[in-house]
Length: 355
Image (cartoon, rainbow, N blue to C red; front, side, top):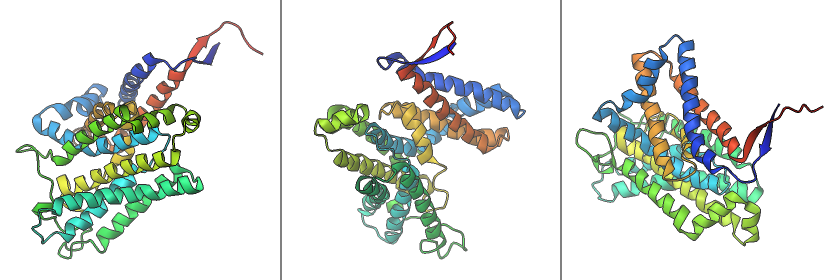
C-alpha cells in the first residue's frame, strides 16, 4: 500500500522540480482538454505557447502583459513569505487605476511636468489604502485576511464601475462608460519605437530587484523569512509581527496600485471598466510559480503573460473559449500546490496491510 510520510527536512530537489513538474502536468492536462473539445492539442499548444513569441510585436505585447503581473507578484511574494495571506492584489490594482485616473483627469488641461509623477503616486496611494483597511482589520481585530482582501476586490471593482458610469465618465463620450482620454503629459512614455512597451514594464523589473534586495540583503527581509519559516520563533526573537505585516501589505498595495495606474496611463490611456483581465488573481499563480522570490517571479510572469497572449490568439485563430484558458491557469495552480505538497512529504510503499 501507499503511505504519505513527512520528511525530516524539506526536499531541496522538489523545491526546484515542483514548478517544472507542475507546468509539465498542466501541458498534459491541456492536451487532453483540447482533444476533448475537438481541437488539435499540438496546434492548440503551439498557438498558446509558441505563437506569442513568433515576432517582435507579439513579444512586445507579452512584456506589456508581464508588467502588471510582475508588479503584483513581487508584493504578494513578500506578503506570503511573512504569512500575510493577501488575496487582494486585484482590488488594489483596480483601486490604483481608479485613484491614478482621477488624478490624471485633474491634470487633463495642465502642462505641469509633475502631472505624471503625481498621477503615479496617486495610484500607489490608492492601492495602499485598499490594502491598509484589511490589514488594520486583521491586526486589530484578528479578522480573516483572506476573506477581507477578497471582499475588497469586489468593493474596488464596483467602485470603479460606478465611477466610469458617473463622476469620471467622459461628458463627450456619448454615454459610454469610460473616462476622457488622458493628456499626453500624464501618459507613460514607450521605451521602443513601434512598440507598446512602456515605462511601467521597467517599473516592474525595478520592483523585482528592489524586492530581491529587501528579501535577501536587509534585516527586514530576514524577519520576513523567519516569520515565513517559523512564526513562533520569530516572535520569541522579538520580531514585531504587526509592524512587519503593515510593511509588507502596504508594499504590496503600492506595487499593485502602480500596476493599475500604469495600465490606465500606459496602453489604455483612459479609465475603462475592464482595466484588468484578472492580473491580480493570476499574480498569485505567478508568485507561487516563482517560488515566492521576486527574481523567480520574472520568469513566472513571462510564462503567464505568454498564456494571456496565447489565450487571445487561440480564441481568434481556433475559436477556443477564453474560459478554457482561465481553466488552464487554475489547473496550473492546482498542480503546483499538489507538487509542493511533496516538498515536505513523500510517498512510501509497503507490502504490509493494516487493519
